[in-house]
Length: 369
Image (tube, rainbow, N blue to C red; front, side, top):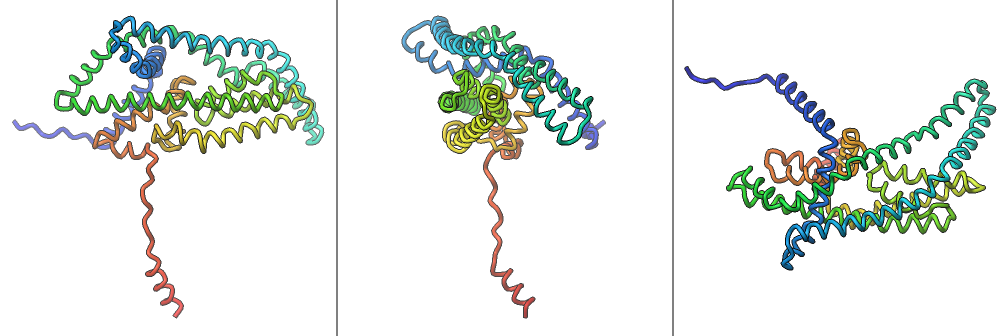
């Protein structure tokens, strides 16, 4: 009895693929508390790996080298966090007054609009209530702070993961080589080296960008006389790491401060102009020269990646969307069957077909004559 080739209709294959995608997405969402710290730890481990290897070359034991590098790294992060927290605590103390003042201004605008457009008193009351509850409830800014607080709940896992990844790096490397066979050993090594180089160069570029943008935001806000310029400048630069969405939130905070603390609304417009100008410099000079040159992903793919990973994992997903998409593109480019997907994610535009003018002119002449 001969075996016949097992054939599935196209609609059955489509249903199976859709169910598989749903199952994968559901699993990734459920396992967020495990996956997100591990991804961040892997990225940090890749960045620290060259420093650890440098200490090992100086005859320092691997465990001692890893502990020393991690201690210095997290000490720097802790000092930076302490500075930011100190500035943010002053800002949070003034937040109730800012909310009340901003609510009062909104109410005045609503009363003016109600008189101009002849709205009822009930509609005015509903507008005031919704506005105040929205501000006190936190709205989008409040949700952002809550999500950031949720991230802090599992940050203690990251140092453990970083240590384990750095310690067992040779074991993990050998695992991938055995997984794909001896015949693909050189390809696996090449891909891993490319991923490490991509992440290292990308994160170094981001750090340089954050430093430049923080300085520009802070100096601009100080010149305009906006309170809490330092914390708003640093926070704006960090929010700028969230592509396309973070800059909107970053600009809204100092605009609110300007509205409630300055006598003229022109200061809020000046703040908006400042942020637009800095974003123009960032998008056209800093990012292309420092960051985007490390990751060849087009804008459409970047936006979709940020929205998709943001929906899946919140702010954490937005932060890692670009590097994960860049890694996916790197893998797609190395696999023949997936090269079209790598081309779709890339920023290389296909050449447009040339239109010959002479045949068109001949046809026009014939029509005229």
